[in-house]
Length: 295
Image 1 (cartoon, rainbow, N blue to C red):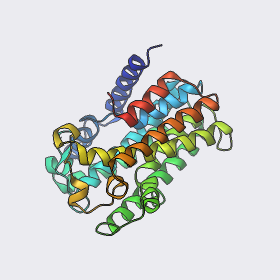
Image 2 (cartoon, rainbow, N blue to C red):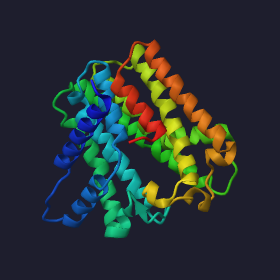
Image 3 (cartoon, helix red, strand yellow):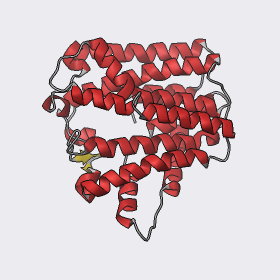
Image 4 (cartoon, one colour):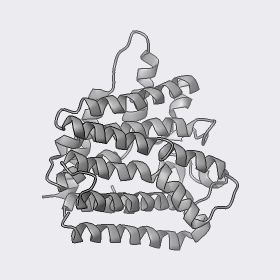
């Protein structure tokens, strides 16, 4: 087993599946479909569907079971980035090293493209051929909660309302547990569901904990990179958090302590998986690459 090779092949499968489920032609909405494909296929590491598929495989479920549900999470993520970049939100002109969707297609088409990706995500779970109807219902419920007012959207609302205000570290952790962490945590949970686990199982609870901690570590590292990297490296504007007067972990804790916390969250997550018998080299490699930001 070669984890790097396996991850490359899995990423290719995810990209191919995304390309196949995104509509290509429409007599009434051609510009919107172009914008949808632009936003989804134009870049991204596919971290969330990779997590969903590798978790499913680690539980001996087979990554194919989780492929469409994992892609559904990526569609939700893509829609959120379209809306996040809009002038009314973060007002970012660059995403994945090229113009943001609203800069390329206009704000109205960008909003509609995001709305349609949101709908297509849930449709994709319904169409998943290798999981039961009960699993589909649970996956849809989990994703809807993660994307909604108790998760990503709620966290974004809190983030906007906190601009220019000083939060405590605990308040910032709560903010990002919703805004960023919810989708990452749900990636683990849906992977477990696709492998046949139920919400009350020991494995499900372990993976929920790991997903929460990895989601927090991911955001901490994202905050660090916003300070230490340039726009070309990031593929999006650097220093944007400071410009928008957003609360960040480096601002509240310093870069060194922020990095230490991210490293500790990664190490404790890997240890918990090992102690729980969920040992999988591909999953372990993915978590390390996700937090250490290695290709």
